[in-house]
Amino acid sequence: MKTSDAEYPSDLVIQAAGVKPNTAWLKGTIDLDDRGWIETDEYLRTNVPDVYAMGDAVLAYSIPAQTKMPIALATVVRREARYVVDHIFENTPSVPFQGVVGSSALSVFDYHFASSGLNTTTAKKAGVTIKTSFYKDTLRPAYVPTEKGNPDVYVGLDFDPQTHKILGGAVLSTYDITAQENVIALAVQQGLRLEDLAQADFFFQPGFDRQWSLLNLAAQHALGEPEFTK
Ligand SMILES: Cc1cc2nc3c(=O)[nH]c(=O)nc-3n(C[C@H](O)[C@H](O)[C@H](O)COP(=O)(O)OP(=O)(O)OC[C@H]3O[C@@H](n4cnc5c(N)ncnc54)[C@H](O)[C@@H]3O)c2cc1C
Image 1 (cartoon, rainbow, N blue to C red):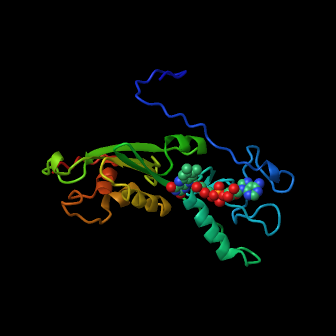
Image 2 (image 1 turned 90 degrees about the vertical axis):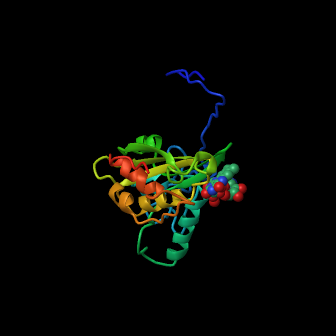
Image 3 (image 1 turned 30 degrees about the vertical axis):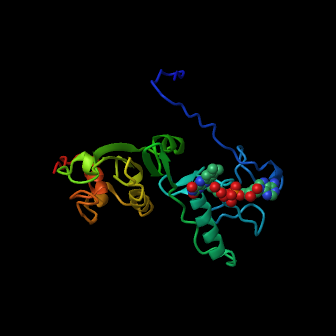
């Protein structure tokens, strides 16, 4: 594949055209931004009294970015709807919508992949400085042979280089480790740092994982600690 920057060897190219909200019919009644996203305040209220907006046509408040950005997911609108239902009868809303992390998973051929929060592209768009650490390991202890069910596993962690706050991440393997992503999502939502994830007390059982759990190791690696080889 050849772009204006470089040429990349590739078997398959997937071009993502992007999406934009189909909100022209609201023009003149509901305030829209210059790209058509419905404008809401921190309580998900539009400019029209008693009219709330949520979902794909609204920019979602991202916890790691601490700003609004497009995150078109059912998981986002479900949380926004729950918030509105909880607060719709308050004359003065008691608390703003907390925001979302934004997580999704996908299987591509033999690989299972999941990601949460910010990545280098979305962080740049949101004006957030991140550092990324890439970690490769095996699912189970090193003494378990590959053919006995010990495939490679990969973790990317995105974090604030100053505070080490975890802002996003991704996991990938031929073995389904996508549930690990929900731990990263919770770490992002709760504002945990690499140091917290490096030390978090997770289980070990050689049938499932390593002596240190995968996300412990990925965080230790991101902190520059010596590799755990056993
Ligand atoms: C193929 C696909 C797979 C997805 N998989 C996932 C997934 O696995 N996990 C996940 O979290 N998210 C997933 N999503 C995203 C998720 O579906 C959306 O984020 C979610 O449905 C957004 O909800 P919404 O209520 O904002 O909009 P929608 O669900 O799109 O609802 C909008 C509704 O408004 C109606 N409408 C539009 N214009 C008008 C009009 N002028 N008058 C009256 N009605 C109108 C539409 O017909 C539609 O029913 C997927 C999306 C797609 C396309």
